[in-house]
Image 1 (cartoon, rainbow, N blue to C red):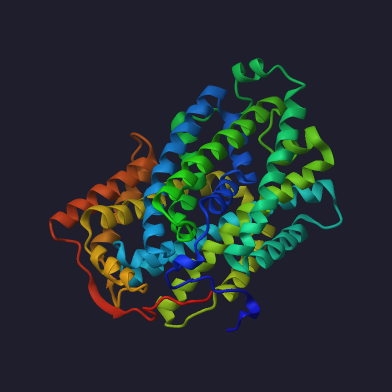
Image 2: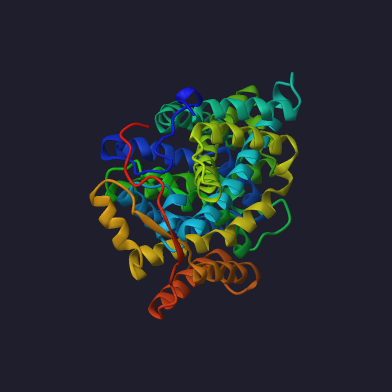
Length: 441
C-alpha cells in the first residue's frame, strides 16, 4: 500500500526521537479531546439530572480517575514509543490478547466516532437543512477521515485551528445564555430532569473518557519526556472537565434540557453551526486515529497481514459515519456506562505488569536500547484474560462503590497477586514481524 492513502505514522513500530513533538503540541490535542462537543453533552446530561454541586463532585471524582489512568499508561507510551494495542503485547496480554485489545478499542472508538458525527448531524440538519441528518453524518465522516489519513502532523495543525475556535464560540454561547439568568439561582436550582445519583454521575464522567485515557500511549508516544506527559494530562483533563463540563451543567439548568443542539442554538443561533463543527472535528480525528491503530494491530496479529494505517482509517471512517446515520446517539448513556466498567481493567493490568510484576519489562527495555521491538512476544496470557473478565463483571454488577474504580483497582491487585504467585505466564510465543524502528512514517 502506498502513501496515496496517507501516512502509516509508526503504526507497528516505535516512534523515534526525531519524530517526537513539544509537550504543547501534544497538550493542545489532549485538551481538544476533552473539551469537545461530547463533553458539553456529558455536562448537559449531568445538569439535567443533578444539582450543580453534585455535578461538580461527579466531574471531580471522574477527572481524578481519568488523570491517574492517563498519566500511568501515558508514561509507558512515552518511554516505549508504542501505541496502546502494540504495548499490550508486552504488558500482560500477549500477542493475541493485544489483538483483542485493538479490536475492543477499535469498536468502542467507532461508536464514539458515530456519536460525535450524530451530534453534529442533528445540529446541522436543524440549523442549515439542505441535507438530512444521515447526509450530514456522512459529510462529517469523510471530512474527518481526510484529516486523519495524514497522521499526527495533520491532526496537530487541525487542533491549532479548531480548539481555539471551539473555546471562543462556546464561551460566546455560555455568556450569551447565562447573561439572561441569575447564575446563583441556577447553581442552587434543582435539576430539571430525572435524578442521577453521584455514583451514576461519576460513572458517566469516567466512562465518557475512559477509553481516551487508556489509549493515551497513542498520543504520548509522540512526547519527549515523562514530565511532558504529566503536564499535558493534568492541564488538558482538568480544564476540559471543569470548563466545558460545568458550562454544560449550567446551561442545562438554564435551558431546562439536555439536548445539546437546543442549548447551543438557543443562545447564539446560527453561530452554533461553527460550535458544532469545531467541537466535533477535534475529538473525532483522535477517535478515528486510535481506532485505525487498533485495527492495524488486530489484522496483523490475526491474519498475518500488514494493513496500511491510512487504508484502515478510510474503512473505519465510513463505518462510523454509517453508524451515526443509523442513530447510535440514542444509546449514549448506556454506551458510556458499559465503557466505564469494561475498559478500566485493561489499564489496571498494563500498569501492574509494567511497573510492578515486570514479567516482560526487561524485553521492552533491551529492545528499546536498539530502537526496535522485542524479537518475541507470548501468544496468550491466560491469567490476564481471566482477570480482565472478573474485574469487568465486578465493576458492572457489584453495587458497592464506583464501578470504574472497582474494575480498575481489582484488575491491578489481581494481576499483582497472580504475578507474585507465578501465575502470569505466556502460552506459546511468536516472532515480532518488524523488530526494527522505521526512519520514515
